[in-house]
Every structure is written in C-alpha cells, then in structure tokens.
Image 1 (cartoon, rainbow, N blue to C red):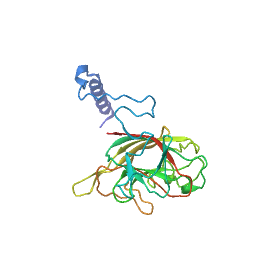
Image 2 (image 1 turned 45 degrees about the horizontal axis):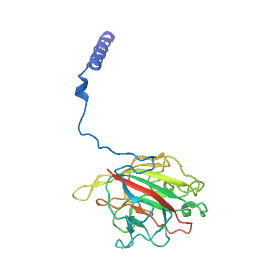
Image 3 (image 1 turned 135 degrees about the horizontal axis):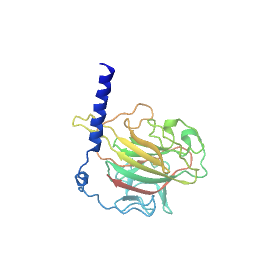
Image 4 (image 1 turned 30 degrees about the vertical axis):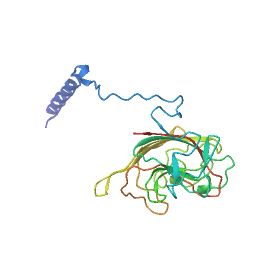
Length: 257
C-alpha cells in the first residue's frame, strides 16, 4: 500500500467519523420519562435518616435486635442516654429483620480511655449479612486505629482479611465515627453455586474506603473466605470479648434497595 493511498483512506475515515458526530436527532427522542423515581425526603443533615429509611436504633431500645446465641431472646447489650454499648460476654446481636441489598448508616464510638494494642484495642465488627451459621458473615472491621498499628487488611474500614481500606479515616478515641455503606448481596444459582459475588462501597467518616469492592466470601479468621448459598440475612454487631473497654453505637438506619 503506497503512501498516497494510505492518506486517502485516512481522509475517508475521518470524514465518515465527522459525519457520524454531526448527525443530529430530535432531542425528544433521547428523553426517558418512565419510570419516575419515587420522592424521598432527605434528613436535615447527612446523618439523619431519610423518609423511606427503617430505623434500627432510635436511642430508646433494642427492639429491632436479638441475641445471636439464642434468636428467641432479646439483645442483651446496654442502652443508656440514647446510646447502646456492648455488654461483654453476652455475645453478638443481630437485626430481627433480614435484608438483601441496602444502604446502611451506623455511628460508633471507641471509649476515650481505651487501652490495649493491635487487634486488642476496641475490637468489634459490623457483619453486613449474618448468614445463619453461628457467628459467620461478611465483616467490615470496627477497631481503634487512630494511633494503633495492625495488619492493613484488619484495620478499621477493611473488609476483614480481604480488602485494605483506601485510607485511614479514624478519629480520636472518644469521638463518634460513621459508616455509610452500600451492600449488594451475593446471588446463587439453583445448584447453590455462586452466580454473582457480593459487593461493598463504604464511606468512613465521609471518606471513601471501599469502592465497589468484590467480596471474596464469608469472613474467616484462620482460613480463606468462601461462599455458600443463602438468602436475605440479618445485620450483625460483634461482641469481640477482648479486655479493652466496650464500644458504643447510635443512629442506625437502613434503606433496602
């Protein structure tokens, strides 16, 4: 192919490309009117529940929660002055309702007088789906990492032992911290094989720490994560049982998607 022919071919290609770009259509043909998004009233602040949210803790009681050890019993943690606190030795608690995909807001606080180090410094966990096999689930870590070094995939904001957070957004112990999370639950085929994995987007104190991350499976401490078939699931909070002062929670709401 000689040079002149190549130039001619390029000119034809460019002209065709410009012709395609220049084609105009009736603007109305690109307008989509249905479906109409439902009207939702936002809260007064970013942390306030919108009008369609389910309130999981309103500062008064734990009526939306139950014990994981015995799901027929009430959650045994302590409620006082609009806050509830882990009561060591009572075990994990989970929501009475089950969820699939959702947007979740949760606020938590490490005690100002926290002691310990590494994973023994204000350890708890938010399990985005409690799968029904004892204390298993998909965990986002809760821990004091303001000035406390630990393994990167086990610090606050991590998908525990799976995904390192994009930033360390910890506030000082004693200050309230927030998680805002979008959870897309895994889907399974009829034969129980995985159809699509779970995905997580998480903001920690307003800072993006997990960006539509693919979850590798159920959180495991001493083995690799894996999946097994389950459906809609409760949300769980962990009584880790370490000797450091217990963690408190407030203002928890959820929007099923």
